[in-house]
Length: 388
Image 1: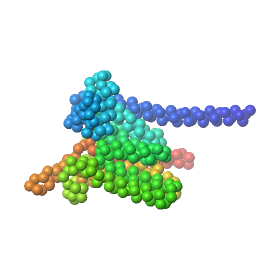
Image 2: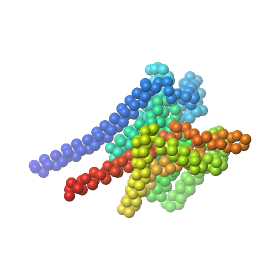
Image 3: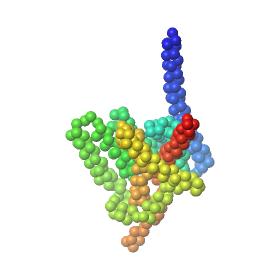
Image 4: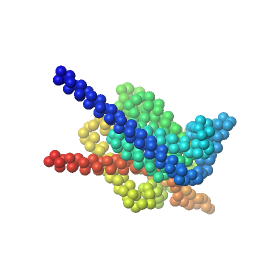
């Protein structure tokens, strides 16, 4: 009788722990949804006439044209089609421009959920909540997620592609991740390099560690790498590339990849606000994060942990660092302005600020990781002292 009573108490206790754990995760997601939504609504109400410019009106007008005549849009079709369906469904609620803005806000809310689910794979739900909260409040992303632009959808697809590539479910890493990666790149072509390298590392491990025969592995690896390498040479990619620049990639790199352009990009990326304390903290935590990433990976390899491979969430910090460090030369080569006068190229040290949010997302992720490691180390030391 006593044994059965004890076992029932243990079962009840176990179910309570499980339900509390689930409830905690749902609570964090609910808070993120509320904070992400309200922060953008407040910003929209405070600045109703800002953040609407040429590109936004193009997306908006093509979405309306699709609704009225069924004409397919030429400007980022996935985003513009979704915007058109959104306006068709909710256009009667308010002015179409306001409805279009709430489309971006809704995408930001959905993105917060996907980012939470990606980050919790690494250090759990508490870390995921803090990381997602900080990234959702990044100033540039916050401001651009109240306008009609494809930035937010591109962010969502990029997060999904990385998350699904790391998934153990075959349908997600075989179909979901490649599709969302293609969608992200179609919106922001520079992601082909910046996000493509981490994705390649993940798939290299998944293929090499699979139970397929070595010949089949080689066929998939060689075929995949050939397709990935030749994709930029496709007529569509070439047409887009030469529509934004007259230089071939090698010439462009030779002209634009200079110490002053690299330094300019670094300065732009790592100055988060105009408040010195915040910016210094932002930079210091990133430096500490680099050291923690190296320490964590080395310790995993020394322990011969199964998690010490690119196919697991343990490598998320390294992928975030890759995104940051690849963004610097890519931005210097492709996003620095220039003028041609008398046959000479003069560089204009200017950068569209909305591109800066991409490396800043990764930096904020690394900063949160560094802060988490510092706090955990302090707590462990206090625990050891108390036990002593």
